Image 1 (cartoon, rainbow, N blue to C red):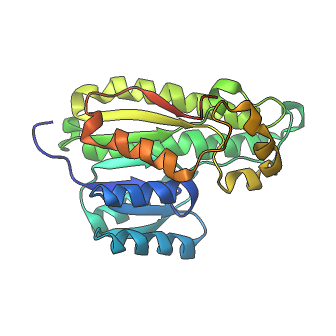
Image 2 (cartoon, one colour):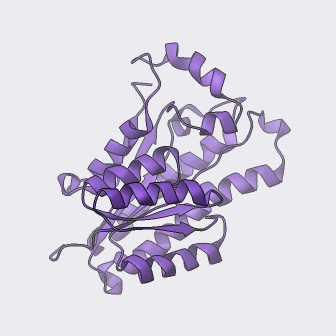
Length: 252
């Protein structure tokens, strides 16, 4: 990139957990932050307040990333409130209750893929349209949140979620190669068992705690540890890194 990219970052699913931690780390690194949320406005507003307390601009952006129209409206709002985009963290993702494949409905599977895969594609599409030098942008960076489940497949737990994250791994590599000459770097982070609310959502909190013995570092990770990896990939320290996915999984 010949000129500095804008320091405006959009993080999807940023009202809690890893997304919220990413917002705070990004603010500390000098980013203004668009905090996307789906339902919990109060939580998003708290993150916005914390970003602003760090001296950066921020706004809360309501959108269900399963909706193309909602994503498009979110990006227009971000353009109006914070200005030209310089980065995207595709963090929004869902799981469902632990289940075998032969017990899953088509509706469940579709919802998982619409949020985790289609939503990430559409958000990246909108980001590329704004950041790519091919479209008159000044470059930027995209970080996609995957999961170690993409490698381990999560049998009898949530193979649908694991498959959606495997798709993200491939998407990260393909998009990175597609836009490498357009000033955009694309990388991924693949968290392992992280102590966040997502395990409670799937009824897996106790099983997650019991899985600690299988982790070489013998503990669950924290949202901030994942956020530090994301912050590195967003930074100029990673300016020669693209198409990579970094495991933050305690050796698992």
